[in-house]
Image 1 (cartoon, rainbow, N blue to C red):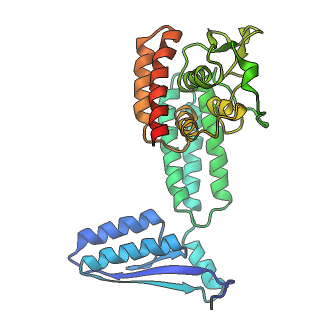
Image 2 (image 1 turned 135 degrees about the horizontal axis):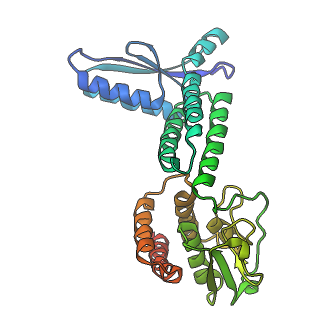
Image 3 (image 1 turned 120 degrees about the vertical axis):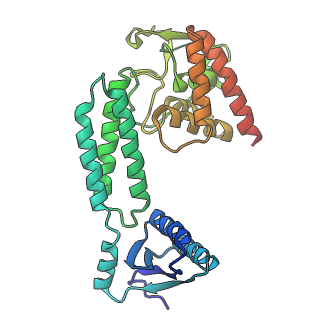
Length: 318
């Protein structure tokens, strides 16, 4: 019978012939990727979970296939002192501290002249944070501190790189009736990128088939008769973690369409980052080529709409 008060652990004990350096390195890298702690040479530890136990069993199989000996053992701590000792082996505070120092060193370089290079470095830091967080089996305040600092720093750099990009609003998204939004004039910022292009496609395809679009050089001069989207103060813009495309989906009850929701995830990733989408790089390259080819925003939208049509059809068929 398991004692629920005592944490469970999974331990991998391996022994490989000294000459088998390649499998030893392969196993070591896999265990490092899992965030396993090293108790001693050939003895590795993870907090127990079905996935952790399964991962250790897989490495045990690799060792045995390479001519070695391996055992996976599940056990509970003998007491609080042992639990504290084991937990300390998984402490990622030093890694988080290093990330905080890297972010703070980078922030003074946030100038218009160096913003692009700073953006590349910040993305690298973000990837490192995700790598550390993935192996942080006992996350605490240090992770939250880096997450908060990183999020604020990314927002600060985005505002510097794209001063006209809308800032997220806070609040609920009201459900609207598409009948009230027919044959309307819709307005957004000129030289549209993925979110604005996808929104215009969505509006024309699913909300207002007779929509007319105008492209604003100055969003503050948006005509009163027009419905603005994807700029501060617009009728439709970012809300919380949702980009404008996702807000339109929710506003008009289109988020029940699995293909549109999947397309929303793609737009989200290309616009503000988040969960990677496999086809994002391809779409980004295609839209970038279109943007260079067409100086007229109306023509750009017509061409980009073809790409969104094909993606929607493909997603629907899948």
